[in-house]
Length: 140
Length: 239
Image (cartoon, rainbow over all chains, first blue to last red; front, side):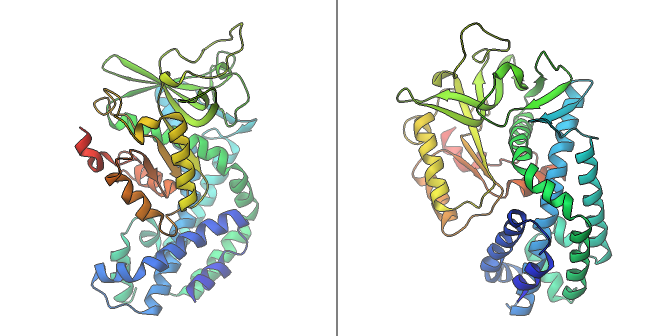
């Protein structure tokens, strides 16, 4: 059910990105019984669906975050080593502070705000899945 | 958690940023090539190396990423890794000779001995680095880690650095903190690929498979990990 809910939520993503999100969520679905066992929580389909949905959100955030971070970190490395930094790839400007980097920053900020509004940022960012399951089981 | 409310918010968000996600989709491979370079350099930094960025002479202020086999190496940025007066070079999309025959391959990232790739234009066409000058390498894929991808990567290692599949680890490799040949992937393990990778240890196959590489990078960013390639303990018997 929740893979469907996730799939429905991300219909506007390009196919390649959508598959990355769904594939990761499916892998969590397979691992869910083991995660519940490690969390000491009795397995339920409803909770597992919520976990899979959270996994999809985590992957979506990681796609935005990692694309942003790659450019940002590269800029920082260059800044550490040299006074100036402009990153180009085949004519595309991927510099820190460039248009693409700024657009990524905006998208990332909006997504972080959205997840915060729904009190899901910690779930999507860095809370281990066993703890996510425990929190979900406690009514979060 | 109100799944329905989150679903609606995500839909609205994705509609608003639809064009950006299409741009991310098309730039992701380019960014990945950059990511593996940054990831490897962060790993070497975590083991005490200092990283120096060397930009092309024509564009000294610009980090120029090489994302294909074409082009002279001196027209692209490379990195120098320095620790205790030992220096190695990191090159993107590096052409390298086969370990067995006259074959030549292009690795996404290659760590080489110093000076084996020309830094400025040379009279005779430069074709590939000597196999013996390549220390290690990394490949990056925008795919889930499925069994045939692992088999393909093993094939690449077999052609380029077979000593990591059979034979001995090169002298000084571990003490100098080098990465084993690495496959970084955006995807998770699929099917029984995790079991296959688990089996490499007992088979003495020394390669690194970094699945969910973007998540690993995010952990480095959050300072939860100092290297996206945490593997040392798995091969402690090699020390």
